[in-house]
Length: 277
Image 1 (spheres, helix red, strand yellow):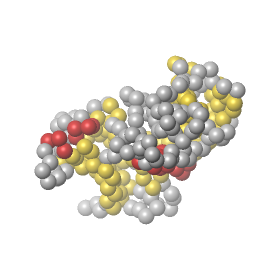
Image 2 (cartoon, one colour):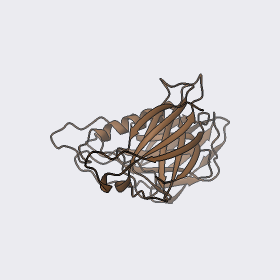
Image 3 (tube, rainbow, N blue to C red):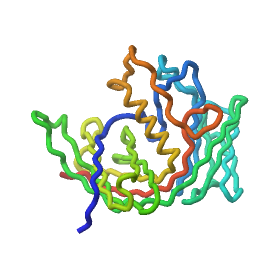
């Protein structure tokens, strides 16, 4: 019987998402709006995409201006390059770049008279072995409104290399709020049982639903961004910032010229499971 190292993480809502788009929204420590660039290269069948907005002032959240008219070029470490096309305001795409593990990618963005650069190396892919799900014990006095599920993600951590992962969870094709990250500092080379606690009501999870998990193998710079973005959001109270508290620091970024956001190249592994008790 396989033995897995258990890692438990509660389903905390730390990131706001617009529909199915993977848009990261945080209230930033910025007196004036700054450019936010979210770009990704993957090894799956999706388009390479970059999204550009302006950050929200910390004390005036909820306004996210899209940035149009940018010139964006992505180049790999073999010298192949592609210029992205703006398909709608602030969203740029190309179908001529397909990511490959252990390949590096650099990006140059020219927007509003300034130039921003970043780079990311796609790690070797970590594969999800399987999933399992079970009904979690109800808290004392808890009813149907507090129904929770344990979702187990099983995978083998590759030995002799630092591995960084991000997990995305989808219910019937709709991405759940929140994001989850993993670093193998204390579990290098082990079989991992990464357990998530999913709250049924806020996630609209019902018997017979189909859950899909996407494991993204990311580099350290991307991991540091998600980790610090998580910390920024965790500093908020009940989804609203306490007006008497100090604005948190901005998330760590791999962009130059003081841009916010992250450019990441990641490899993808997916598994699905039906919700049952």
